Length: 121
Image 1 (cartoon, one colour):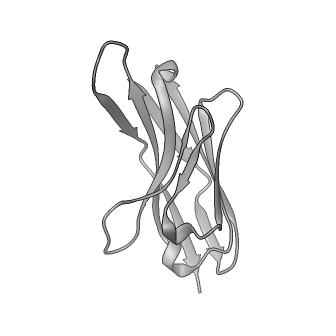
Image 2 (cartoon, rainbow, N blue to C red):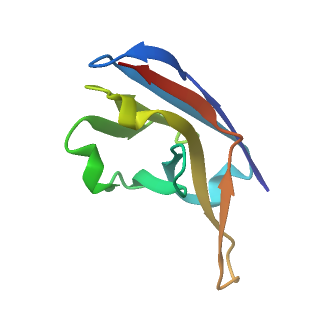
């Protein structure tokens, strides 16, 4: 099992920045990738960014170079640096970890409880 705990959300003005953090615990050595998803008001949850253990990243189109995902040295932490925030970025941001167990053909995703990001106009 993997547990995820996010932090760093809050209230920021349009154009401001926030840095989200997520710490994984439990069977962290089975994690092969981590990322962030978000749920904005009235919309389904969507992927924001992902990063693999070897550092490969992928971003949603709406990020447009404003966000940067990174991993900590110990690989149990993932960050999301967000800049040029707009009210459209308001929502709950969830940390995600993807786990693979040797001998098991399936991947197992885990999510944290989320952290609220509110961008005022």
